[in-house]
Structures are given as C-alpha cells and as structure tokens.
Image 1: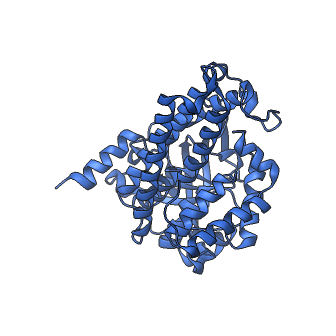
Image 2: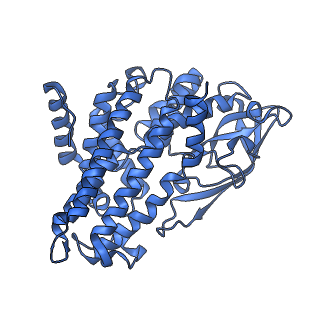
Length: 396
C-alpha cells in the first residue's frame, strides 16, 4: 500500500530502506519484530546512528540541527524506518519539549538542551498527569514555590513513561494558586538526578514497567529552567500536547503491524487452510488497510498545515491512530486463535527465543494486544479528544 510518489520521493524512500537494512543493529530489529521489550541503550544506539547520518531530528528545521524535511519526506522516513524494524524515535525530546523550546524557550535553553537531544545525551520524560489530574490536567496540585534563587517543587506525577531512565523532566507545576487554574501553571525543566526525586514503577497489563510514578519532595529548580513566562505554562502545555497527539497516530507502527498481520495470516492455518484465505478475515484486513491509508492522508494534511502547530485535527489523528493500533493487535490475536490465549510475559523479554508464527509468537501477540489498550488513554483519553473536537471544530 503506497501513495503515488514521484521519482525523487521514490529515491528517498529507497535510500531510507537501504540505510535501515544496512545500519539498524540486528538485535534491535529482532526485538522490535518479535514484540519484545527494548531498554534505554537500544533506543540510544539507534538515535546516535541516525544522528551520525544527519537524520537525528527528522521533524526539526535545519537551524536547530534538524533535517528540514517537509511533511511528505518525514512521513516516508517514519514509515520506512518502522517497517524495517526500527524502534520509534523517543518522542519526549524530539517531538514534545524540543518544539516547545524552539517556539517559547530562551536562547540559553535552546543552546543548552536542543543539541543534546539529537544523540540522547539527556533522557527526557513528561511530568503532566497526577493521581487526581489526568484528563482534567488544569486541576494539578504539584506546587512550585518561588525562592530567592529559583523554585522549590513538591508533588506527585504519574504514568510517567520511561521515567526510570530519565535525566530530565519537563514538568507542569502550579506557581500561583490564587488565579484561574489554567493561568497559574508554569512549565519547568527539572533535573531528576538530585535529592528529593523518587521514581516508582507501575506494572501494566502486559507485565511491563514502562510507566512510573514520580515523587518530587522539595526539588530545586533554578529560574533559568523556567520555560517562557511564569504562569503561562498552560499555553505551552497545549502546544506540546498537539505534537504528542499527532505522534500517537503511529502511522509507521500501523504499516509495520499490517505487515506482521499479513505474514501471520499467510502462514497460520485456519480451518485447515491459510488464514488469509478465510473470506471474513480477508475483508477485515482489507478494511484496516483502507483505514491506515485514510489516516496517512489526514496526517499529511495536518503536517502540511503545521506552521502554527497542530490544531484540533491532532485529536482526530490521536483517536483514529489509537483505534487502528488496537484493531491491528486484535486481528493478530484473531489469526493466532487459541494459541494466543495463554499469555506469559517472559516472552516479551529480550532473551526469549522464538522464530516465527506458532504458540510462542502468539504469546508476544497477546502482549501486544494488552499493551495497545493504553493507546486510547495516554495523551488524553478518546472521550476528552472528542470533547476537544466538538468544542473547537463544531461550535459556532
């Protein structure tokens, strides 16, 4: 399934394919294609390979060390990397706080942090959600009290993805409790390698510990680590969330998992015949392929009109991308049939040994299914996204 590319775009697509085939470490490719867990060094190795090529920041302008690619080239790059078995690029620096610093950060913050994001010299995490402030983020309770030389931050963040590896957190904290909730929030960059920071894992449905709770107990933040203006963090938070939700659409992931689904359907027996000969299953695969193509076209439209940052269309992308990723995981489970029912989290671990379709791969398919349940929750639940769409696109 491809859009119609011109010769230059076809040549670029082939260049990316060849590069991924030649330069992606085999052990990382194996983990990705087998749905096994990646660790921090896997991501860092791939980021640095891309940075050496000059592809470390596919969505950034050249003035900040990026490629300067337009939306079509960025889309081709993402699809071909993920189809080739590469892990997703870490979004926290490149796609989230990076764009915020480019637009709202001081020159000092840009010069200090942006170059290091290209090679993951710093591992970033997001400090938004709290136990009582998820969908209603403006109700957050984490406090930042101003002192003579900065802020002292206390509070709890939760669902902090890959926070166990993080060096830095971009954090929303309340700096003025006496004004409208959205007006009293600031965005701070917090060094997590200091006293007062505690990270505790949260085990998810697939048996993993990719999310965490982070406790901040009188953690110090100097004034220079304030992003933009004090009490204007809600503006920056919304800008960041638009970039996050666009990325959650996961179009490259959808393409790769469609490949996996087709492979499973061709090599797994259903009623004594290859599963892809089953009429009902074939219809489902065709339908989801059409859904992926429609998502891809919408993503291109949004990316092509992205000068002011993603708008409410990002919520549409987030909803549809989440649904399609979940549907793909469900179909993979359906193809594997009864083999997919037993689930052993150990098959997700890097040292698990299995080669292809069969009971062991089915266990990893089950893990993928459980893991994908979170996509309609993180980055703002689907219900919240629908409210955003209704308010911003359908109101008079």
